[in-house]
Image (tube, rainbow, N blue to C red):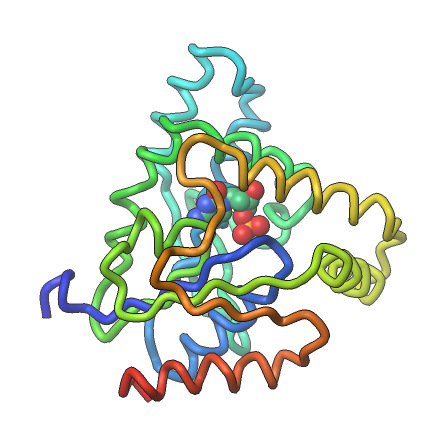
Length: 231
Ligand code: DC
């Protein structure tokens, strides 16, 4: 099967809308590969922080672009439906989920040079038997010919509450109002950038998960996958 024949399902939407959970559950159910494209931007953010690179400095942008092109990245299956992220063999799965890296990733993701450096890397993940691609621009830019495009959204209040519950469950003393403000900032930055802004593809199915359980959202997505004859 050539790359262009490989079935691709794109799941785009803002952070915290639940697409990561849906993407990994579907990938496990279908036995398809999973591309967590946000992890690539997070790795660039991590490398840039470690090397003290500043997105406002053109020379630093050139260095970051080279790092993005040569990203030594591996996704490894984890327990359940999750996967671990390795950067040059180092397990950075938890490190790249910290707020500092979320912030750095979002700042580097607005850079056109970084986005184009990661473009082909992302397309290379489309291999048989199929790919679930999770991100912001999977259906609009990276896989415009995907067989099924889904845009997953939820209110900012609900996304903040979910993040707060997640942090509280792991014993982190978080502030709901601060998380809410950060989500609004990040949404604004992702939606207003010049290259690949966050928006549903014209042919995407929009699913709003506000007030809905993961099981209910998953069932809705499954319905679309069944209609495609993929399940
Ligand atoms: O989905 P995430 O929170 O792990 O993404 C991290 C950052 O990368 C976030 O600011 C959005 C950005 N991103 C992007 O610009 N394009 C993608 N396809 C995926 C993520």
